[in-house]
Image (cartoon, rainbow, N blue to C red; front, side, top):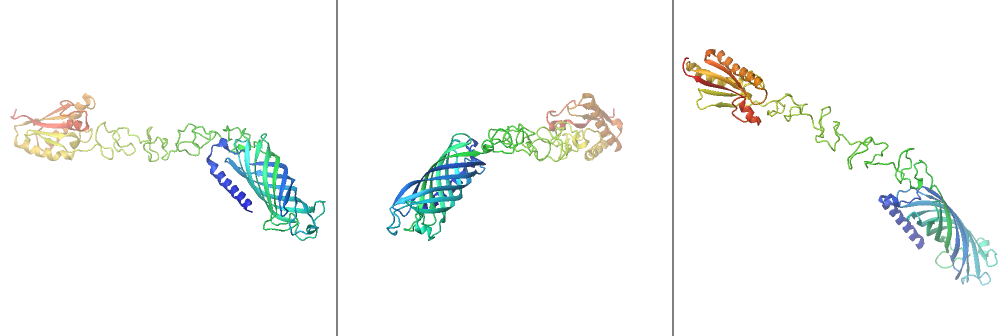
Length: 469
């Protein structure tokens, strides 16, 4: 039993090796996968019984095998077998009466099944280990062919359970045929193969066989892809689909979706794809995630090539949030995309003679409507004007450098007029006020920055005469 335990451990170890081989390169796979085999073999037997000398005899064995599907270098299979043969010996043990026999020969008939493990070496050599269980029917005879008394009288059962173990190799002659060399051991559960029971161990025998096997299914190609089933890793490929040497549909871009299903066949390596092989687009903006620099764009928002919401006026606020969509380039805006209204009042050293109103603070953007921010400053100026009736004042409007000359002159003049209208409404005579639109002339700051342009958009009020003329 120790030998059988060892064989079983070897078989279990090979099984674990088989599982570990799942990641090896497919060129090393076992092409016995999902194959049936028929084996006929024969050779010598050598009994280990209670007789002192064993004689070499012979046996014949036939088996039907099935190799389980495997995606590894080795695979497991099952077999059923029948075996017949003889064992013989001389030198009877002391417990047998001298007049009984000094020589025996026992005919054995076995029927059983088992499990095996085989591994491919270049699809040429297949080392193999088997372990099985069988039932032995046996008849013990003497040297003259007479059934021995203990056997004939029914002193023991003429059949018994036995353990079978084999180890060997198969050498492929063709794709469908191999020649086999096998060494085996058969151990019965009882000690009667030689007609007597003696000692502490049961009778057993060794076999050394030469055989031939024929295999069914190694060249079968069920899906017609040109790769036989025995090595086809994708056995149900649709008809007409191009496959690799292992029968799997081609996947040129390596995204896991075969070419015949891939609607985006040139996906870059490593990019995650959907069931159709197209790069994922989580926010549905039409720009795949691996190119999308704004991955969480709300549904329906128009985006640019980088997947970011459009910003037509370039103010930093995307169109779908921009409440002032046509802001001129360079104008500072708030979170809603509208120009920031700044209160900037510049008062010259002689405050009663010169006042400057900043356009962003005192007028609506691109309009000439005077804002309430300007009222306190102008009201203070009204007080000065009422005290000095002899003064004449120029109200000059200015713009930044953006836009045409004519447009800016007209806009600056309208803004200056809006200031005059306010002063007149407060009681100042229009004859004391001169309206001039300078447009983008006389800038007081650079027009290259938003801050500079904001300073240039202004209305200057200054004394031009201190008499009644």
